[in-house]
Structure formats: C-alpha cells, structure tokens
Image (cartoon, rainbow, N blue to C red; front, side, top):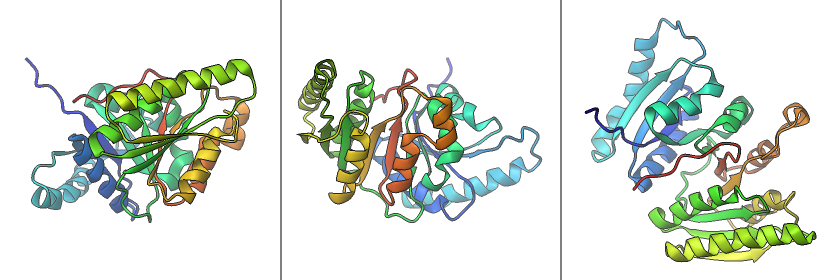
Length: 270
C-alpha cells in the first residue's frame, strides 16, 4: 500500500524579498490547520538545467524551520508546468488545500485562480503576519457562497476566529430569497461548529457586496477577507481586470482568501 500523502499549505516561492512574509504566513496557517508546509517554485521551463540549485535554495528555507518548529512538517517542490495548470496538479498529486501568493503578483496568478480547485491566499509582502482571527465574509445571492462560508467556518473552528458576515441588500424579491438562504446556511454552520460570529445586512447589492465587505474589513482592522471569486468571466473582464483583482490591489496589508466558484473545491480533512 502506498503511504497516504499529507495535506499541504503551499507557498509559491519566487526568490524575492516577498518570500519571507509569504512563508511566515504559510507557517502560521500550516500550524493552525495542522498541515504540512510545502514551498513550491513554479517554472514554465520544463528543461531547466539548474533544478538541483533551485532545490537547495528551497531547502535552505526549511532548515531553520525544522530547528525552531520541529513539529512542523515541511517539503519542497519544483513544478515545471504552466502556471494555469499548477493548482490542479498541486491539489490532485500533492494534496494541496491552500495556495499562498504575493498580492503584488495577482495579475500573474489570475488565470490560475480561475482554474484552481483550492483557494488562493494573497498576502502583501510588507504586511504583518496575520493572526487570522478577525474575518470578514461577504454573503451574496450565489449558491456557491457556501464554499467561502465553509472556509470561514474552518478558521473559526481551528483558529478560534471571529467571523463577521456582511449580507447583500438586494432589491429583487428572488435575489433577497437567495441571500436569505445563504445567510441561514451560514448561521446554522457557525452554530453547529460553535464559531463566534456576527451577521450584518449591508447597504450594497450582490454586485457590490464584496467591495462593501472590503471597506468594512479595512475600517475594522480585520486580518482576513474571504471572497468568492467571479462566477462568470467575460472577455471584458480579462481586458480590464477581474473585480477581485481590484479588491486585492486595494486591500493593502489585508490578506485576501479567494475561493473559486467555478470548480468543485477540495475540502480540509481533520
């Protein structure tokens, strides 16, 4: 029998100063969820000749971690595929449950985000290491909002985080019913898992709900915004940029967790 693989929190390493903060946030989340920390260097060059040198540089990050946090499992990986393919390969072949990347490079990762079966956490390279204790969750009319709600519940359950949900304020009766259904799901889930939470009805419709949640998160000094990504992506979106790109850009030091609604998402195992 083959050995069961550990679920992993993956950090995309680029050998830039941004790596330090990404890895520190990765350590925090790997510790919170009791998962392995995997440092990944992704390259489109399948014939790169310096793989051993790259591996040594990746391993150099893990040496002090093993000394300082002996209980933290670590691994390294060089991924020689197109970036858009990376999330699925990381999830299917390496048990990745969360991918961490530099928020300044969102445009680079945007197409990978829309193909990913696991969430992307975008972290500012100069921001403080988040405690992931105060979470803001926008709730709109989409049924896939259950995926982002589920992730917020895991932060509540495993990290004793407090979740503040901002419900969309739609005018259409059918939309109101759908939002109410999603709010009811969130309430029941949080109560079942004993997650500390508050629910607010926002001022904006489902179209602007995420932007209202961002403004609230920044004003209240939250340390994580959990978003459901775009459900429908048009050529115009690729031309002018996805709404989530604008949110990540304007989030500053606030980490943003993006859950892809266009894929069946992998789940966290106890």
